[in-house]
Amino acid sequence: MHSDIKEIMFSEKQLSDITDRIAEQINRDYGSSDIIAAVVLKGSLIFTADLIRRLNMCVRLDFIQASSYGAGTQSSGVIRIKKDLENDIAGKHVLIIEDIVDSGRTLALLKKNLKDRGAASVRIAALLSKPSRRVADVEVEYIGEEIPDEFVVGYGLDLAERYRNLPYIGILKPEVYL
Ligand code: IMP
Ligand code: MG
Image 1 (cartoon, rainbow, N blue to C red):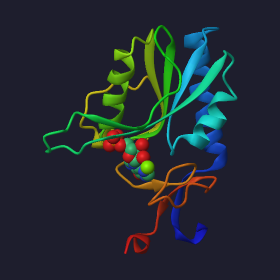
Image 2 (image 1 turned 45 degrees about the horizontal axis):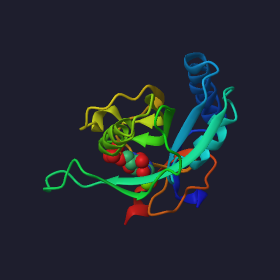
Image 3 (image 1 turned 60 degrees about the vertical axis):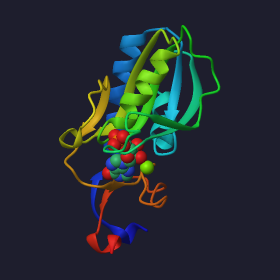
Image 4 (image 1 turned 180 degrees about the vertical axis):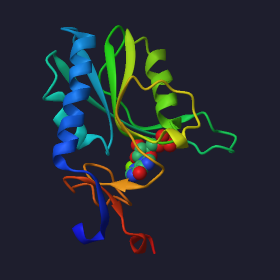
């Protein structure tokens, strides 16, 4: 598994520092308001575990798994929820936790969907973002690091369900894709 990695983009120490920084901003912005963490499965699992232990307010954990239909189809702009939240979020402050923002399609639809349920507020915390890939117009309030258009794995991020358990984030060797 480790031998499939060409280059480490973020070491465990760097990921810890990034997470410190995001948590500081969230603690400052929300103060003592309770939040519901809407964890987008599965990639953000590890980031979530590290992030919420740095948060000072009461955090309720909830999970959602969603996908957007591809662009160019009749149904684009529709979100398919594979697993929904268990909490009624009306009147609650919801923080969506995501591993990486790529086109932004999934998050744009998810944010709208959760707002439509009457949440008091809906914000997004994403560990990584690829701004050059953005298609959907979605505000991501907390971003750990912006990265170039490279496919990365580890720390929850996968290629076909593999590499999620790497403790760092890295770029795969090209031959892995062959
Ligand atoms: P979006 O709707 O196009 O923004 O899709 C974002 C989702 O695509 C993320 O939640 C990831 O599951 C996946 N993704 C995007 N880029 C990467 C990457 O570099 N590595 C692993 N997964 C990625
Ligand atoms: Mg994925």
